[in-house]
Length: 117
Image (cartoon, rainbow, N blue to C red):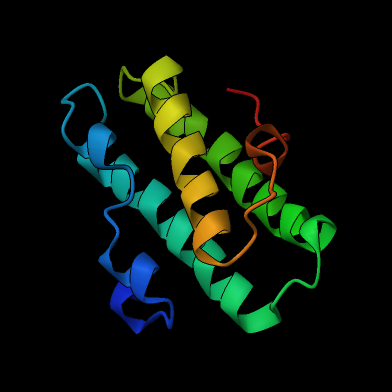
């Protein structure tokens, strides 16, 4: 499994992904862990491919968002859901990732445009 500490970007290494979800018992920790893994995988993919523009970045973030879409059913099965708090936390983390990798003009809504939560 890829570890956050193995990423090259120091801001990302030190960041706590999905922090507010971890602190809220409404969200099962094992599912939040899966969400964190999606975000870490996104970071590795950004470091591997070095998107040359926002369109390439959005392709990566949309793929990661689709993985969150797939995870939503598991939240439902555990009497939880990706709702307003989770949506805000996940969206903020996508924005943090974009900014940390130098994509300061990334549109926060476009980063997660393929979401269905």
